[in-house]
Image (cartoon, rainbow, N blue to C red; front, side, top):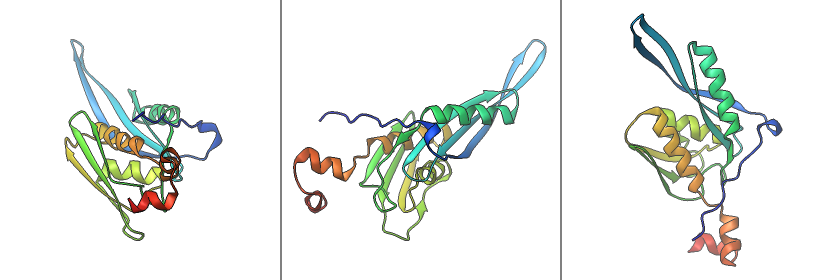
Length: 172
């Protein structure tokens, strides 16, 4: 099975909202004393299937967040959504983090932890059951969630590839 290409999106065309997932204070010890800097992981999305994440590092918190937003806007991707949920069950992995995403019926809401919730809500998922396993490091959880979302396959393209009707995709 050929891997589907990632659908990149230009940030200038759409209205994006950014969400801060986490800020870490990093300390570097030098002979002159301690140097503090900050790293921020940020998720941006339009709540209509476009999402991206970015990492910003700086000596100041606001600058780190701004850099993270700029980085996230450079890494936007389109993910398939189906009536406010995801098309099918999917696993994602990055480093020590593993995530499990399962479609949910309308009205369920986003049942997910902090870092996963930010990514899913920014993507526009309104109903999903999600579980984060392994490492709870926010950087790895965000990347594992993005991995799972990128592996999602759109039902329409699946039907076209198989040469069958859209109704048959959901029956089998």
